[in-house]
Structure formats: structure tokens, C-alpha cells
Image (cartoon, rainbow, N blue to C red):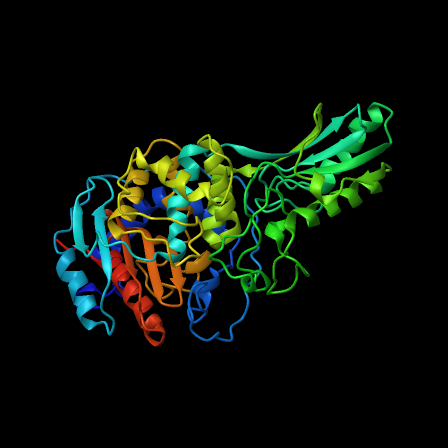
Length: 493
């Protein structure tokens, strides 16, 4: 960072630069409104590969590196205000951004970056370097998945888990509806993870049965919402025990994490739907309902022929689930969102259709001609996204007036939340102001999001590099952070 771009002395409270920064913070409120609650509850969560860049990717042939597993995310959300879609356009347009960024790149020990910076309001490209070359994006893939979910499904939509009763066969069916953030206990309206609870569903179901003088049922599980394989061929089964991923099924408790909730690190289950079914059965029995038989495994994908809905519990909104997926960089939730986008687009919900549906949902409004997706979480090295395509989506969200408008505000916040909680900590203009989605695999680092510059101009950016030597990946990430910090510090007129 050049001396001219250094943040002002915090003790210089009367300086013009200090006043500009205060004004800038006020303008920044429109962008940060959607994440204030998240900051207050201090999310501490990480992307599996962002935490430990040395962790081998799912397709690498390099020897395994000993790493810690993924930490357990903790999340509770209250009523988060809808974020503003943009800031005032009266701020000066920065013209010296190329000189500023080139100075950072010149000092870096790593070369090969692709990046683009745009004015968030006007969509003018302010800097571009290899911006049309598709690269392995890692978890930045979730930006597209999130945007597609907000656009195709709708931010206020909720996913319902229901119980349905067939009076002819006295069969009660637990019908999976795509909610993988269920709790085992009571529904908690103040949470995203645990907004709907299986105990609540069981108690409501039992009450409805007893109203009909029914105390004995056969029990079935319907997982027909998703079809096809539930685990991508490009993923590694060993990543289940690390907590990185799990078979993608339309019902789970706590995204299939297993073990004590007090543990810092937890793996995930090999059979999440079966686990949720068992929990529901036990809760149902506690209410006094006798389960006379369980359908065998081959029958659990077929719903009853004449069902009557008895009870339901609903998830948090899609907007809140998207925010959870982005802040925690949760691969399971991202893959489920991909399946749900496919359903919203009129396709079967599947791992095969999810990536196609994400691109289809965004293709009418943004340029994604170079993009290739094989999953919707970013675990695969075969995904390809160009920096230009990412900033196209980001800029569209800044000026949107629908559910997509919240996208950038749902990203982790520099120095505060999620996978950026330990980045930009000492940068006064960037900490609390940068909203960006991280992405890291063993040879990849990327960052895409938005930042308010020192004079109040909102900028969107995408910075990517792949095929990096593993021993240089941290230096590459430092260069990324230095570029974003330079943007935050820069009036650049």
C-alpha cells in the first residue's frame, strides 16, 4: 500500500480526511444494513478451504495434507432489515484506479491474476485485467447460486416439511421439502438454522391424529423431491468426515452435522435423511403415538396415493438461507439451493440439473457466456467463471429492485463475519465495509463483492487466480486483500 493511500491517523479527528471517512461511513450504512444483526451476534464460521488453504481439492492428486476439520457454524438471526440496493450516485468517479491496482500487483510475489472493478451504479468498467478468462472459482461459485436462488425461487419463499396421512392404509408420511436446516427440537422463529423443528412437527402431527382418534400409524419417509445421485462423482467421500459435504438429500437436521453441538469441529452424516427420519419417529413416539411399522428403505421415496396433510413446519426465508450459505460458505446448503433453483425452473431437483438451472435463471439478465458449472457449491475444480461474469452479477444486484438487491449485503463482512472475520481487521476503511464472498482451494484464491471507496463511490469487484503454487497461496490471498484495501482507501481522482 502506498503512503498516499494509507488510512488517516485516527487521532486526527478534525481533519478533512476524517470528516470524509465519517461521511463515507454514513453512506455505507445503506450497504451494511442487511448485516448489522449478523455482526452483533458475531458469526464465527469458515469456508473449509478458506480456513486451511493447504487442504487438497477434491480432484488433486497431490499427497494429503494434515489439516483440521471444518468448525461448527453457529447462527441466530433476528429480523434483518432489507438492505438498500444502492448508494447515492453523487460521489466522484475514481479515475486513477488502474494506477493504484497496478502498484499492488507490481509489488506482489504472485502473478497471473484476473480481475475487474466496476462502478456499482453506472456499470462503467474502471479496471480490467484478463477479465474474460474463465478460472476455477472455488466457493465464489456460491455467488451465482445465491443470485439464482433469490431470482428464481424468491427471497420470501419458505421450504415446508410436512406430515401427510393416508387413511386407507393408516400410513403417516414425513415428506421432505428441501429444508436441511431443521432442528431436532422445537421450531425457533429467531433462528435460520433451526427455524423449523422436528419435535414441533411431531407434536402438531400427534395432535391432528388424536383429533381423529388415531393413535397408531405406519410411518414412511418421502424423499422424492430430489432425484438421481445424491453425491457428485467429483467430490471426495473423505470430505464427509471432515464436515465439508454430505449426500444431498431433501431433509436434514443441522445440515447433517453429527456429534456434540459443543464441539468446535464436527463431521457430517453419510445418511442425513435417514437420521432426520429417526429423530422424527422418536419425537412422535414421545407424544403417545404408536408406530406399528416402518416402511422399508425401498419404499421411502414414494409418497402415499391419497395423502392428507396433517401438519407442517416452514424454514427461514430463502433470503435468510442464502445469507447463511454465503456467510458460512456452507457447501451443503449451496447444493440444496441449486436443487431448489432447478425445481423453481420447472426441472427435477437434482445435482445434475442444479448447475444448469442456476445458469438458466441468470442467463436472461446477465452475461454468463463463458461460465461452466458442474456443481453449485464450488467444490469442483471443473467449475469455470470469469471475473467479468461475476462482476456482471454483482452490479446487477446493486441496481436491482427485487430479491436480488440483497445479494451483496448477504456476503461476509471484512473483519466481522463469516469467512472474512479475520481479514481486513486492521484496515480502518475496509473493516466493516467490504462485503465479499471468498473462495479457496489448494491452488485457488478468489474474492468477489463490493466496497465503498474513500469518497463514497460504491465499487464491485472480482479478483481471481488459479493454478497457484501451494507455497504461494497465502501470498496470493494477501495480494487480493491489498487490492481491496487499496480500493477502500482510494478516492483515486
